[in-house]
Image (cartoon, rainbow, N blue to C red; front, side, top):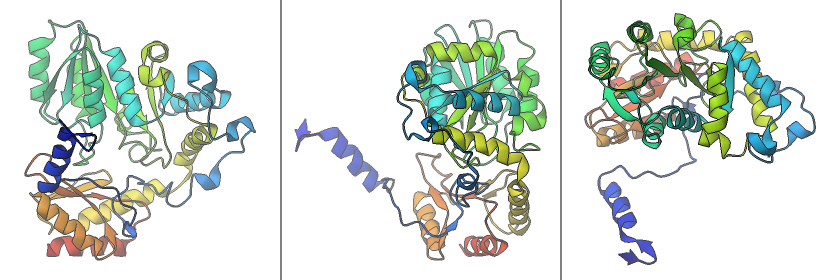
Length: 376
């Protein structure tokens, strides 16, 4: 049925969301104290990337690349940046995508075949879910960070499929907790047909001596089939990269649709990515971030239902959408922006305020944040 030239089911779906208090809207009037963004190091907010960009040639200054990488959008700057990424992350090769979403759907949908199986952590990001849906592979989820759950699935299915791909995030975006990567790599090494894919979106720039991510901090990077690095978070710019062996890169260039059929990132975006890799080892933002995380943890012992983590992400579970909205509004009245994360984005009963700690947050701001939450 149609109403005012709009399919009825669109109107019903929107109205249902409004009635359930989960209707999404765009805003621009954000409170000034940022405990919400993923700009963990302040590379974007503080202008650290933009103030340190390399001088570009006239071609690299264009705001459009003119085409896909396979047509006219490739450049020496892109390939130089990919070489830098691979070297930094101790990999043979890297391939840049336009976003972390594009990287995950392009990697998973092209590599995983009909005769394969995907085993994924139940709290994996939506882009991983969508990549699996676009592939022809069968997929099963295992309990979050549960090695026994994963092991049980592997033992039940490893002889029934040509290849099995285990997909996890090194740091999860809602709880901020780390994946048990060492245990996972030890488990999959006992089988010949298992391959590990790790999304490092929330770990790059936060973990590792120079911000390389959790895989390199733990020394398991060579045990991964593929790793995904996203640049719109701690790196303070835009884009993403898949790193792995040369064969993987060549395969993605030939079969990854989100790489093949999209216009390449322009020169100024590639320049920003390259600059962040030079900035990571040469600034003290990581030290300041870790100091702020440690301070937050040390001062938050009285906060009930706080999910503490070693990452920049902390969460206070409040249990309903209404409570999450109320606490977000209370923080906003004090010029603090921390985001209410509501069901169905998270499971019913685990609605929360998601807190992102940054290098640029002051101790006074952290104290104010904790005071308001403790009063709640």
